Length: 307
Image (cartoon, one colour):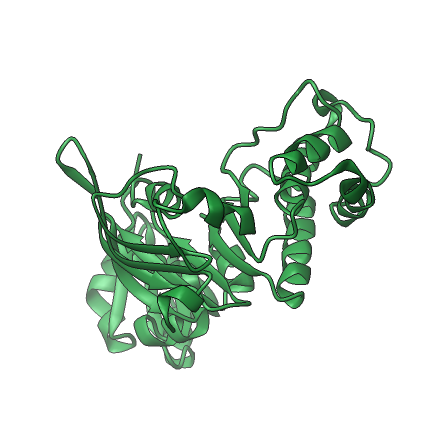
């Protein structure tokens, strides 16, 4: 896809701070109407990448086109067609829910006559009908997050950039936001999503990139990445004896085994032989499940804690 026809085109993006490369030759291109995920551990360069793409941080080098316009040269004009949900809510506490949308719409040159019917529709879309006059301080965390999403839609953008949109939300709020994002994709919107929830990425993303240390590790559809990097089935083996069992026997059943603490992860195509074997080991417990995107993520980025 040509850079100027893509909602977002990134080519060989570089950004360093204090001589440390935070984004290191990153390239990816969004297709219209898709949800594209940008995944990586803490410090992988996701937020810096988003800031560069939106023209909020100047890259050291690379080619960026947002809504067909070069960034950072024409970032302000490009952002007129982009809705942004930041990682942390930045709603104005002095305004009501409706006023937050109205004031934000004025940044895009929208008149009140245009916005009033749109504000009502967006509040209903966000599950906030009847909360028009509610002060921000009275809203729950989930309500604030949904209001921030509604605010990002005020100018009816073609591209949405969502930085960890469901972090800190309870399951009900997460599922409601997933439902709304699916609706937006059904309307032809394009979404760039960062998230630490692998189930969220697997559920929403048509394609995704996993990055670490500012570099692209892999890119593709979630299902394709699972098939490429991990066997289709996982048997998790628990217990004090699991590491010893894995060292002595796991290779008989699995070509890939990982041990973390008292758990051994056996990646297999056919789980029956290892499950039959483990049924005779009374000191061990086993959990059989399909492989997931989280397995791919941990394989490619490691299980070590990142701060």
